[in-house]
Length: 116
Length: 372
Image (cartoon, rainbow over the protein chains, first blue to last red):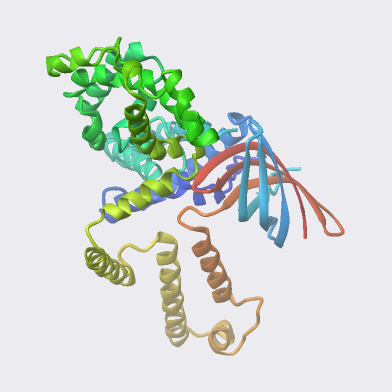
């Protein structure tokens, strides 16, 4: 076993659902349907995206925030927390406040399987 | 954290993904031009969502300074107030902006660059008298007709036009008549003109003081200016016909969001998979197949457990998506800690993208408290 290369680090795919992720997926989908790129290359690109988003959010973003609200639904399945929070107020770094009637939080475990 | 930082973060992400993908594209024999096009398409898609101001976006059209576009001349000075001396510069700026960007066309009605230089004298005069007009109105409101005398005495009623120069194209005799007129005017005439002024002033005055009613008044004016109800109804009908047409297109699945299409595809795939399995069961033997085939059939027909009913989940999700709008109200992140004591929850989230009110925010760390 020791002779094998270390398994490639896995990155979450959840950010593909963000606007920037769906924008990339849509763009790639267009080029695949037009037969201009191979789906394989698109998948690779999305994997790069998974990794880069995690890295950039981790290393380049310094902003903090806090929020309060009423928990409507919670779910914990396969190490993924899903909260649906109603009447939620976000307090941003610059003391700006944001409000939403209903927001869905999808949170993966920051410690990936295999990590301690 | 502000929405403005998001664009820069996204730009970094795009650049890095592009850098990494360059190699893959070379290996796959796809030219770099395609990669570049994908990047552009990606950026365009983000721009279209309007979730953030991104560095690659075309510069936003200059803030519509004309949102409270003056509809009567007496409103004009409000705009020219700050720094009247800089008027010519502002004019040329506006003019040049107009040359480059056709979007400001609506300004042309009152702010036509070609006419501005000639109008400037007139505007300055108005700007100078605006304070007086306001004072007059205020006095009128507070003291009613009793104020007339004092207004007249202080010379508020009629703007002192002595020092004002009308533009060159004005008839010469007007210039001669104007000086000193304010002071020497008989009271009645002054009162009449003042009333006139006040009437003129009423509307803009309301616009300036209460703020909130602006749009309503303007909208009412717009509505009043519309030709007739019949025209509106016919226009509504046209709109409705267009809407119906677009609904027909949506029903055909042409312009549907990807997520919904995917769900449809999933159902089709599942149906196809069942078909394949039943076909496969006929071709191969062995104990596994005999065992599997009935289970699959049962899955299709008999078991109605909540736990494995994926359709319901999908329904729920699609309902949630539908409620969330085009981008959704979501936070995508990783969690460090989730704690619960009775019905009080606390969590520490990291590396997230928050989408709310069609805007996106990124955060490194977020602390949440909520109760169930």
